[in-house]
Length: 325
Image 1 (tube, one colour):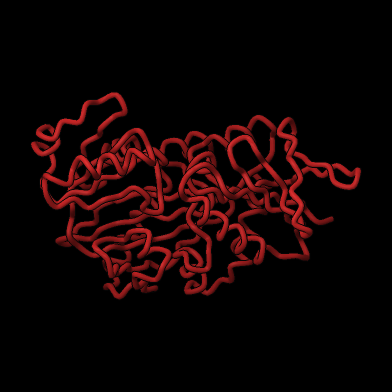
Image 2: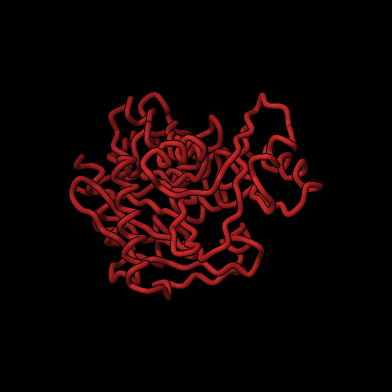
């Protein structure tokens, strides 16, 4: 009997459009002979099942089901592809834990930890992972330019502490632009993280890890045509993503080993992508993505294909392994 899979997309952040594209890719590639799939749009408290006729059917959040034509449908697994809240920060994961429904991402705790850039960096720094110097500006903190400049030199990056797809990120080259950059970041998240700029080669590496198998994908080098790997570079063709990365074997091995160590120490599960800067021969951790993009333009699908797998095969494993945990 076919398993019924919910593909949850949308969410409450600026990344919802990327999430929708990712959900279309997943629905396209999940094997039709094994799964019945429904895309579910999540927008605040409104959760609706998309239908072929264009009708939206509300989800009963008491048991995560819906009724159509007098018949009730329940789900065997939730494929969470919401980038940002509530799909990447542990909220949906905790909900599905309460209902006993398996899902395809990291646990609620790991999702919450990795979504908070500053908290994740503090944890990994304690394990000896190299990373940029940072300054955290909390919601209740008064903007103090002098305090920031004493700790972080120009140029610097100003980012939402919880966010992705480069929304709200500004590269700041001079003092006069700092307050505007903080305001831009705060439109995405109340807390802001300010990091020193590290010049080097930008690398991205995906890993698939469950209790049944671990697969390391090839490393990708990112060459942005803009000042950094911003939204345009990621999704509008303003970058070159080279897979496998044109780096020597020794550096590639170091990236793969570090990704595996980070994923293991954080107890990550499913598909995860870790981004780095290589400068002066040293690898610096940038961030970890526990719900990485799966659109046709995203990095993980490229890495899957270059590793000799099909997207359908990896997505099938992800659903199977999630239900078997």
